[in-house]
Length: 371
Image 1 (cartoon, one colour):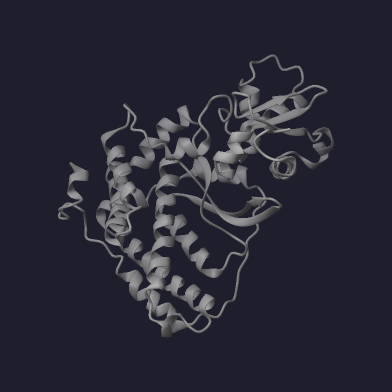
Image 2: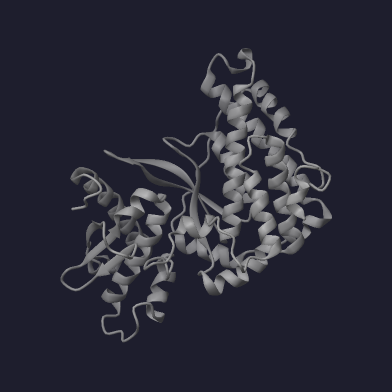
């Protein structure tokens, strides 16, 4: 039993880990072979060096490092669980395979279930790989500019934040960063990653679909709503937006998502009482829809600029294939929700103020970032 968490919490965490394993098997192993994939014993390990470990044979043990669950987001845990599940599948379906632990057969099973072949060992967890703050000696000057611009999107000043987000997209288009990163990442980091962004929700209401579509339409990511643990005592699940793409693209999309959520919170709090009341929750939803609709218009207008042509026309067949493997059973839903037009218009009016000048070069305080 783990020394870092109680016995009850350990049990709840391992139930959630077991759910990840079960989904991977049901989604990717042919049904006729399910009876061959026996459920492992799951355990937390405080002391092992690796983030995860598979011990096969009669032991059939899958261990996850306790600190991974306690100190990193759930998507980093999923990354490791899928990696260890691929080890189990190699043992089951190719028992006489004479290859190193991370050989070609293992990589094949990783592709089968959408796992990262290098997600365990002393490899950095997924959140650290995507959001690493340390400057790399090999980082290109353009990538460094984009990273500094993205840091501005955390600013409480919405003008700094919105200009940083839009300028980052312009720099990506100008230098075709998506293509450049994809070429290097495919060979070094297995191509694409999946992370979660935004709030974990009990129920996905309409405004969050508008937000998700902004990320899908303008930030080179694929999206899906999935379930993650909200807490472990007791185990409770909620809905969260998962995005898939290159590490650079999901990082930019994550910052864009945070900015939009924070902007709506701030703008709604500043609305007069006659806008916010009565029926606060519904009016806030309609207000947010207005903001997101106007921001969608602004980004669509940005895409019509000639300098954005490279980014807009980029196709991602490899990302489509990655997404299809990761989510083989996609279910589409629709809703018919009444919207208060006046409240939505109030949000749209503020959202249109997010339109940005052509560049940041004339903004004195921020121009140093581009030197």
